Length: 332
Image (cartoon, rainbow, N blue to C red; front, top):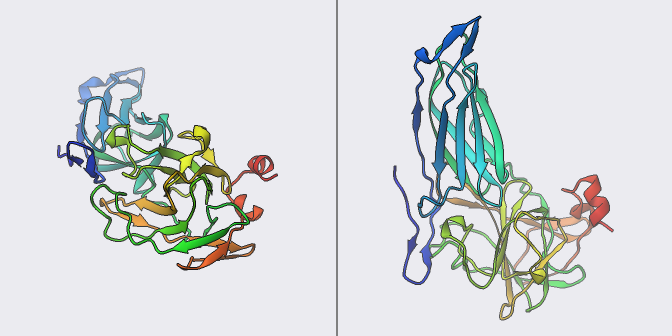
């Protein structure tokens, strides 16, 4: 096994690399385990635990556990445990299969909610020995196969009726440790301390960071402080930089809706930065998305730096990713 570690100095994390640890396991069960009796087959139950860890490896850090359980007829039932408070995305790749077949769409990506998740079943071929398989797993904090609608209308994350002043973001220093992604895009807004910040799109809160980080580095989505990160409904992530939760009521795993206030600008901050990004399936690179913002009741556009826009949050845009019940509750 090969590990790529976070590089830290004595004071804090300086570099963070998206780390993917792959563990292979060849499962073989001898045919002698089968006992035929009254045309029914029984098999000794086998349990395989596979741990995939991103970040600094430790015995206590096990974000995802995958189990492959043989049932009484020789099929293999795969389940997974997400031991984090936020959704994760699991990729399972089979390098070798014998006495069975994998019928799921490829590449196999499964969104794991916190806790127990069922995955799939490898069915034993008729009159064959127990399935043999060799596979590896990876996990991601966003959906690496997300189908992104580049024309989706994002709300300007400020209070409706205000004037938004846009600036050109020159650097995202500190977002990815001491490194800066080779290619990135960000939206920047000039703000004042205490100014309310609103969700640009519906999603689930996955990380809330104040003025300092106290959690384990392997749980981090990036290295910025004073930020809120949200898993959006299309599987991408959006990070709101220079925002703190309103009255500390916002919680991880909480669903927030487009146009809902999520926090305020902290003291000594005068810039609000938005980054929308996605993990890549086969590399450590991040993909960044250029959003289209709502600039009037019936118009969206890419924002131009040094230009001002009147903030509008049309109900039809806010309700796009809400259920009927959610629209009745939130669009009053």
